[in-house]
Every structure is written in C-alpha cells, then in structure tokens.
Length: 307
Ligand SMILES: NC(=O)c1ccc[n+]([C@@H]2O[C@H](COP(=O)([O-])OP(=O)(O)OC[C@H]3O[C@@H](n4cnc5c(N)ncnc54)[C@H](OP(=O)(O)O)[C@@H]3O)[C@@H](O)[C@H]2O)c1
Image 1 (cartoon, rainbow, N blue to C red):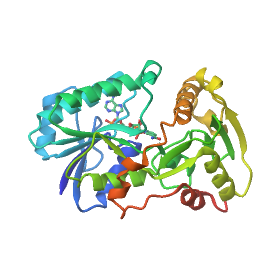
Image 2: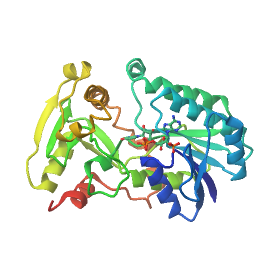
Image 3: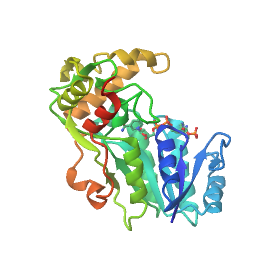
Image 4: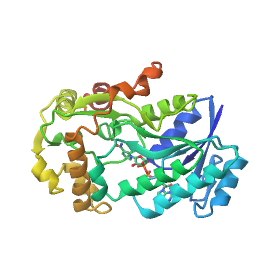
C-alpha cells in the first residue's frame, strides 16, 4: 500500500485523483489544502510553514506526494517549492509528482509564458533533494470536449474545438497530431504508477492521439452536423491572437479575453510545433495494458450522440 498526499486535491484534477484513489484499495490518501477541512480526508496546511508541513507528512506516514496545485503564479510556485522542501525533510516521504499534467513546452516559451520558469524553479528544487520525482505529460485534457455531459471536474473553456457550439478555431493546418487524455484515465494510470519500482523524470500517458481535423470530423459525426471551422495561421498565433469560440465569452469576467487569446495562441504554436504529440515509445500505457483509456471517438459518442 502506498500512502499518498494529494496537494491541491480539492481542485479540478485533484478531486478526480482523490475519487480514483478512493476506489483503489491498494492506496490510502489524504488531501492537503490551505482551506479548513471539509471532510475527514482533508488536512489544512500553511505552505509557508515548512516544518509544520513536514510534521503533517510524517504524522500520516506519507510515502508519495502528488501535487495537483495550479502553479501559474509566484505564490503557488513558492507553495509547491516549500512542499518539496517539506517532503525532502520528512522521514517517510520518498516520492514527489510535480504539478505539470500537460505537455513539454519549447525552450523559448520561458520568455513569453511566466509559469514556465516558475515550474522550472520547482524542478530545480526537486533536483537538490533525495526525492524520486516525476512530472506527468498527458497532453490536453479530453474532458473539455465532452462538457457538460461527460463526468468531469473540469470547467470550460475548451481549446480549439467548441463541441457544444459546433465550432472550431484550428491552429495551423489542423494536421498536427495531439495527445488527449481523460482526467479519470490520468488518475487511473497514476494509481498504477504508484506501484512502479522506479520512476522516470517524465511519465508519459497517452489517452488518444488525433489531429484537430480528425477530432472535428469525429465531433461532426457525433453531433450529426457540420461545424463552423476557421484556421489561425502561424502569423496570427505569433501575434498572440486566436479566433474566438462561442463558449469563450462566458469566462471573460474572470479570465479576460486578451489573456485567454494569449494562452491559446501559445498552445496553438506548441501544437504546430509538435509538442502535444507525445512520444508513443515513452507511454506508460504499454506497462499497464489493463488500463484502457477513453478514445476521442468513444468520448464524443458517449457525450454527444442524440444531443
Ligand atoms: N493538460 C491540460 O489540458 C490541463 C488543463 C487544466 C489544468 N492542467 C494542469 O493540471 C494541474 C491542476 O490544474 P487544476 O485545473 O486542477 O487546478 P485548480 O483546480 O485551479 O487548482 C488546484 C489547487 O491548487 C491550489 N492552489 C492554487 N493556488 C495556490 C497557492 N498559491 N498555493 C498553494 N496551492 C494553491 C488550490 O488548493 P487549496 O486552495 O485547496 O490549497 C487549488 O484547489 C495544473 O498543473 C494545471 O496546469 C492541465
């Protein structure tokens, strides 16, 4: 049995991870949160108090920390760095999963995406410790394309394809392969990864691999109608501009349009650069053939047929 602490385990991915481990008798877990506990699994922590966090990890004999914190700001990066220090000092803690849960970014992206150097800083801290650690590359979360019908703790907006509104804004030609993985499959694979005798610094999980053109075609088949599709070329993406999808406007009150366009343009450039086309040879799927991840086609059919 592996005793796990899920940091940020109240969040979108963290809740999914906690639910999945609840159903897996091989592991036990607690959730670390800055907030007051809402159930018996949650433990309140102040990441600024490193020795107190170490005491929590030791009290619960935590072997593995899984971070699902959203590390896109300096305070969050400081929290995750302090958690690394606390884990390194804990006599029970041997392993740490850094919160990445996506895809590698090009080296030059550090200049225009501030979260990348922040995450690099956490990695630098991990390298100073004796902890065995990994970061997970799972491509884009598939859930966004089944919402609101797919079981998921994620919330909109979707990138590139708005299945609900039958529209797509495709970066580049649309012929670049991308990996998409359902969050519950990510969690199921992580439950298996906890049992591995050795970890690599990158853990690659492949749910399904399709181009955005193929994805749109599957979505059109599932919905039984053509989508309104536009293509954003590299010149537009390099100016950090993308075409708007109908569902984007609803999130502007708390995620401004310029910020969203900037982020999706960067993701678009990474799609065209092949960064979401994770290496199949590295996929841990081959080690765990018992875990059969949801395909894009299955997800679309389950979520959208007859709607
Ligand atoms: N590949 C993809 O398509 C994709 C999509 C979305 C997200 N992601 C990645 O998945 C991971 C989790 O994202 P998410 O959407 O699940 O995150 P989220 O729900 O927005 O946040 C997760 C948790 O982070 C904690 N947190 C936020 N700010 C913090 C701070 N300053 N210090 C400490 N903890 C802080 C909060 O926990 P408490 O308040 O309880 O402490 C929160 O519940 C991230 O690495 C994100 O980049 C990937």
